[in-house]
Image (cartoon, rainbow, N blue to C red; front, side, top):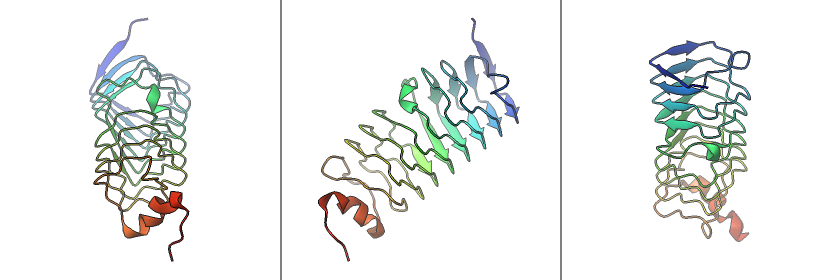
Length: 190
């Protein structure tokens, strides 16, 4: 099956569950209020695309490429981003729900996760240097052997990050986040 190449197209209110998105390359496209729930986007390449208010919960991402892609106010719960094509992988998230998503072993320096819910997200062995977690809820998120050097977590909430197993050099935290850094030491802060 030959893949399509689509450039600068706007998709609005599309139901890609009933009518699956064609496999192919999408460049400079905008997807607004579209439904992708549990769709198979494997093998698709998205370059400089925007997803706005879309439902992408449980989408399959085997070999999917995201290059400079923005997600605004989207539902992206349960996604396994480690299944994506890693070549030039880069995206930004704003006001998104990424609960239960996995970024296992990905290299995502400078990624922006602004005002996102990342409850139970998995960042095990990920490199997210200089990432921006402004206003994020990280309740139950897993940070294990994660490189957070220079990351900004000053306004993030509910995280537990063990400094003995994660790289946090020059990362920024607020005083209110101190308990999340000291939890592994089993000490009380009053």
